[in-house]
Image 1 (cartoon, helix red, strand yellow):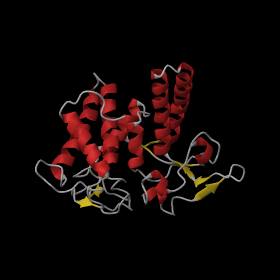
Image 2 (tube, helix red, strand yellow; image 1 turned 30 degrees about the vertical axis):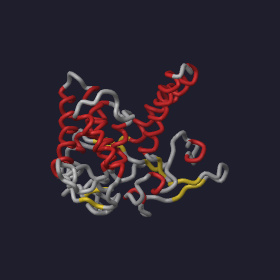
Image 3 (tube, helix red, strand yellow; image 1 turned 45 degrees about the vertical axis):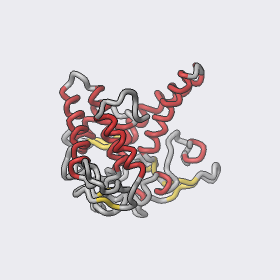
Image 4 (cartoon, one colour; image 1 turned 90 degrees about the vertical axis):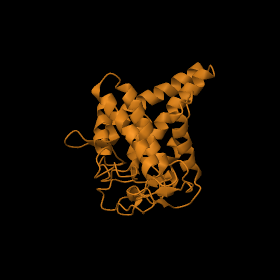
Length: 271
C-alpha cells in the first residue's frame, strides 16, 4: 500500500479511485471533490486526498500483524509491527479528526494541503471500528451519530450525512445504509463503551449501539422473525426499504454476527 498508494511519500495513503474503496460512487469521489494526483518519480497515481478509512484499516492491519507475529513466536516482527502502529496512531488522530462546535466532531478525508473534504460520511465510522479515536474524539463523533438530522435515521446509519446536499436515500453510496458500515460504527461504539467503563460516557456509547441494532431488526424488511424478504445489498436509511441486489452475502454475514452476539456466542465472531 505504501509503495503504490502514498503519492506524496508522506506515510499516508490514498485510494486510486472510488471503486477501489468499495464505496464506488460515494459523494467524496464526485469530480467536484476528487481529482487525480501523480508522482513523476515513483509513477504512483491516486486521488488528491488522504482517506481516513484506508489509513485506519492500515493502522488496524499493523496491530493484527503484531498480534499474529506474537502468537507465532516471531518476537522481532511483532515488535516492528506494534512500533509502526504506535507511531502512526497519533498522526491519524491529528490529521483526520475535524473538531466542530458544541462538542461535536468527525473523522474526514483530508486533501494534501491539510484541508478536510467538506463531507461527513461513513468513512468516519472506521475511526471507531479500528479504535484509533481518543475517547474525547469518540465522544465528539457520538454527538453526530445520534443526531437524527445527520446520522441516526429511522432505519439505520446512512453512508453520508443527511445534512449533505448530495444525500439521496436511494443513491447507492450517496446515502443508503450498507449494513457492513453500520456494523463498523456499532462495533466501535461497543469498544468505546468498554473503554469508558465506570464513566457516564460508557452508557452513552452502549445505548446508541443497542439502538442501532434495534432499529435494524425492528424497522428493516427481512430482519424480523418469519419475514422471508431476502437480505439486500443496501437499504433506504429512512424507511428500511431493500435496495440493490438481493440475497447479498455481506448483509447476511453481519446479521449472523448480531444473532450470534444476541445468543451469547462464546469467542470473537469478528476480527
